[in-house]
Image 1 (tube, rainbow, N blue to C red):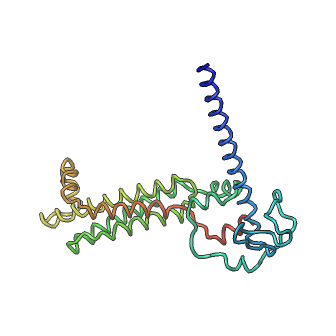
Image 2: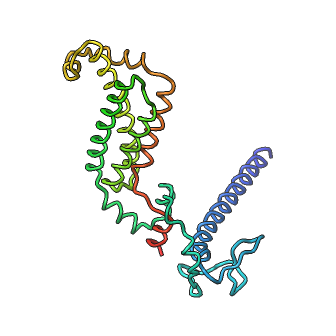
Image 3: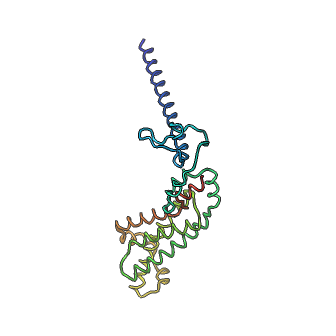
Length: 252
């Protein structure tokens, strides 16, 4: 008897779980369909806003229920004029809004090796400038790290036209390593000036076994902050950008 009751409870639990999962899948599918409808509704002159339900069709008084394309759709030109054409859309949003066809098209235009090369070149130039300015002023200017991150990211974006995540990761890593290199050049510059040596001579004579201890000793909490910002800038700015207007023109 107890076994029968136990089996009934298990069956009831599985049935309830099945219904919950089915309900969730239905809601998820409904949400996706609604989002597809809204791509049309938001730009249609026949839209009407209901504060309780949301956007409705002014012709039927109902929520959209068409498949693939609305036969009554009529473009509202005033909406197009208001679409932002200045601010870049977040990269993840771009990936979600681009069709598979356009996504593949832009991926085919990527130039990853060239992006890496230009990123490294700009990073080295930035590191040399950082070292030079630090030695000349006697101060380590943290904002140089941010400038390096931005320079690396923007140069990789311009040359690489990157869509894939690897561009952002590479930009962040190159920016971070460039900041460390800038600190290293600063150390070399200080040693060269204090000992009356040439910079290349100092690079040749430097005991690289002492590099980590020296950099650790000169490292501060603010360095960590600026390095983090530089890496973020290198990551964020390495991707190809699109405005809302660009996306609309591509997907219309």
